[in-house]
Image (cartoon, rainbow, N blue to C red):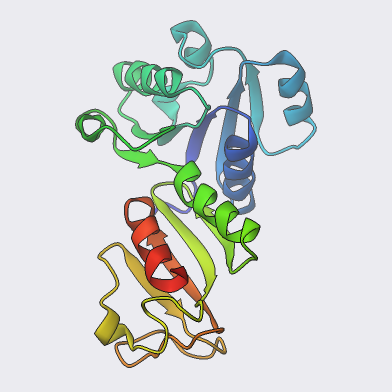
Length: 217
């Protein structure tokens, strides 16, 4: 069961970090944001999503100001994978804290030995951008801090899954049709993926391309 109130350190106040912090704040969690850029840090203070500390989160003296020993989770979400890994390692030396790390490319399988969760927001985002360039059909509804996104996908006319049921298609493990066309029913084995219709899909980043290929072609 997820605690009703978490204290979370978010390292990195860029688009991903700020959006994550805002969502956490909206859900009643306490957030401490660490941002290296002084000018961006000033702007983050105006967002009122949490306490803002200016500095490099991978430096122990900066990270210690966020009091990892009083936190439940640290999410290292800068666009620098090396900084994110160093931040998670430093936090684990300071306290028993859950670590979430953003990676910038296909995750190294060894990371799982050192951090609790990996976030790879670029993968599905790039595929969604490609589909928008080609004429739309994919819309990100929610980026979940972890390894999951909620996406609205329109089934393309010539997609491999078009006109077939979920039972026939066999979506890859790590994906799920949440709501079928019309929005009034949870997807099930008998759900037919009608071309031109939109479906709400939960998908882990590792199988995002496979799901897109099935539904968009």
